Length: 287
Image 1: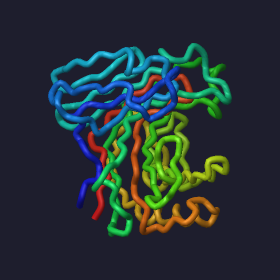
Image 2: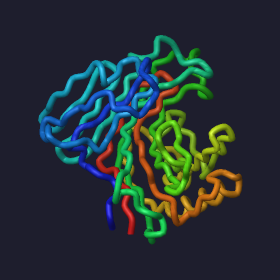
Image 3: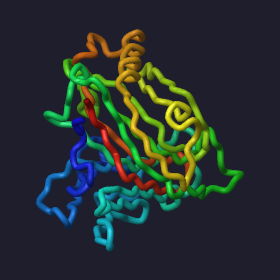
């Protein structure tokens, strides 16, 4: 097995991308150094779209007995000496009222853009395993019941990879070649279970394909319960690629020239929730 991700123990700090009021780009606004390894260059970035309290502008870094902590009033990231990470999101400090339809929602994600030898062709893989060991320790609703609309409001933990066509001449606004999204289920505050599904975004010509919670867990995940899994995604990625091509997405693409371009993991908060997830392991490895 060969690990694709770099710094899986989160010991090199983070680059911080933009937030509310910043130019929407993948430019790094600030680098947060891990005091245990201050000369290292970061591999992970923090995405905080639609946050009113940017870690690029207001933050503190401190050490506890078992972790290095990066935080401000609306978010906290704890990198444990044992190798795990905890992502905490306090949207009760962000939303002045419940989000309305069409309005942006907060993201608190860690992301890695793969470089060089990390960009392995699918043709070189016999199996491709995504592995996660996690517990959602908290997801508290901070809206009154009469304000809550499950069609608009939720606290969700997501894990996606981008599957990119390295031969594409397209350059997306994020600086990527043509791609599609592939997601694994982690948590949804609405406790809804679903099967494998996909969405064809006709506007962007990008496919979003997701493994269902029924496939991975046999139902919805819950707070306070530890989940550990390893799943060979290669057959599903191949299936998703076929769906994209059948619908005239990924023009000219060949599966042998597709690679994993990036991954992101963490909270999306279209509702007013305070949430916390601790992940002991995040891995993408191939045989």
